[in-house]
Image (cartoon, rainbow, N blue to C red; front, side, top):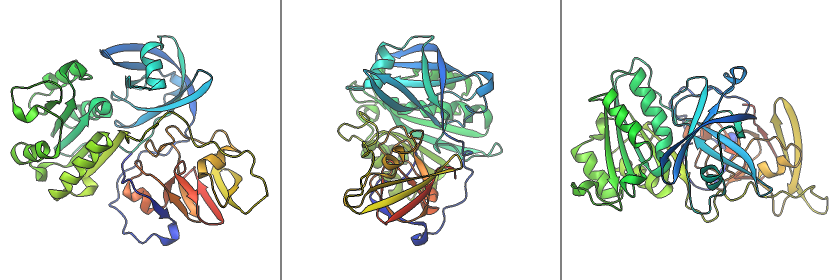
Length: 390
């Protein structure tokens, strides 16, 4: 989930941007939900838990993943279907999926998980996806730096544990911000990683609500503190990959600071856990009109999913998103956050043009080749065709 956030009109025919460097992408799988049983709940802090799901042997291929990827969960709370995306927090073992969940104010799903979920319960889980993954090969040496805050640590745990285990020549640095020491998720796991990989894994803890002996590490991770770290401890030219994960202000600040130090954007991956928008994550996609009447001009949305072609229409004067229109004829069209963050609804634009309101999920090379987030894209041409299978 790594891209800029701005409104844009997207059309493959009009795309003249030079392609980004070719990078290995995780294999594209059909996104579908499977019921999995909760087989473990571990307390991390007073407001956060690690939840484990047992993967049946017959579904091991469906739930194979690359460290840094995420899954979507679906359940019904108070009669309303709720979907949320959570990053996987441990390297793959073929038997278990682990996520970290931090309870947030007004968070229906996180509150349900924190207070009501029990071992033995069943939740619908979508197979893993995402591009917040390392491009290093096993033969590579070098350095990786991750900057995270709060629950932004979850994908970093999977990345760090995997890279340190499989790349003996790689050094991993974590810059991690929290309010107090009691809010640090995976505190013991981080200590275990340091012990297991002495000299190759270092953590810089920043605490905004608790004084530290070193002034640099007291307070939030801000531009000034990050600049000082880059000047004194982490020369940017020594870093091969950067991973940024947390709320939008932190990610934007870090990207801007790295830009100022001439870090190539192709070396920066980022993932958001929140954009800070009011009401974010409380509802699904905008409710579509069902069905569209012929009382005025309409735009046609054609989409391919599982090799089958579907069609829907939406009013020209106030069009629905492609996702909302498609859901009127295919309820299994994939989506999770509906906020432009998780990338579950990604599809390739084949013909036509769209306006994409927000994009916090797509890589620059994905944009260059015509991918759009259908939850954020409304048609601007009379007809639009997208392919969810590519």
